[in-house]
Image (cartoon, each protein chain N blue to C red):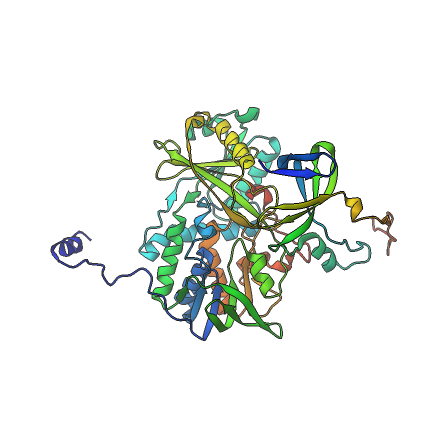
Length: 103
Length: 415
């Protein structure tokens, strides 16, 4: 059974975790082009190397970051996202509408 | 045939001395009209149709390992066309039709066995989606019916009608469902292609793709450089890695897919049976072994290792469906590497690099499309990049315009 070290709960069975995709910068959805948004949502390097990715410990509802090799499946490091994301990110909850909705 | 057998029986020589399946390896030429990266089913089928229908024989298939040794040898050999979208059904339907004639065409037995495929519904929502799939399939000439629990019982008497406390409400009975020997498909295509002058180079790894001014002009291999008119990439399991050599980023994530097989038992199961809710499909091979498979692994990886988690969940589902199988012993397990797209449809056609054609994103549904992929990719190459209508919906740029071809429900665990 493969064990993953959760930064919050310690070593746990890998089946308790959910993969959440690669850590990559999100373009601003209000200003980026459709192509940029498609790149962010669908495209990925998907290569053989160590990647930084989001993981979720389902029983405790906790998101964290792991560094894992995509061929050997070796998990090198897991840490709390606050180590990487130490700035507050402002989201514009109400984007300016360029035109009135037609309905 | 009996007379020729008798004739050979009376002769001293072995009759097939000069009838070799594959010619001996030769040196790589400096230039080919077409280079196909990947000597799996799709690659050799493309070469075969290029030579047969389009007279293009200055073709090299470059294979890192051996012929059909990748995912062609790792799938569970299911052939079906009961998909959901009209684009998907049209495409796979033609593939099923081609499969039916392959043994004759090759004069080589691919062990095509038409047994029907049964998918089980455990919820009303699934029954509704089955109705839609039945209609779409019938419309495009496939043989698919919605059947009730009584009919399912008659078709598969050994099936537990209440697996995991999820009663079976209906079944999608795909009469065209079939299996074939996957290796034989690759061998048959390779034999036909090489007889027509195509060169198959095994143990020849492409290490880089030469792109000049946005145009693919050749490849670097472990046996030297080769220039070419165009390149077809057909490397299931490593699509992103090879495409990256040409500077192409793809909307693919790569996951392992595990399958396993038990010891052989008496024949009892003719159709291929899969359950949409249990994420498991079960079939009995011609040798009597029971083959199980399911969905891909829960997280991306380029590795064919085995995990206990998946074995436990898959076998639990299989035993729920056929309880007496609890007494069978597992004989082998293996895994393949699947290039999953987010809409569960392939990526075929043009790429951002000129003269570089993609046959990728074949996830868990690659084997069943081998003949039609070969045929349409050959058309694409022969017409200098004019995309055939059949594969136009599978262009990579569909992701850029959010025009996906959603086959997830018809694919997830029902190969």
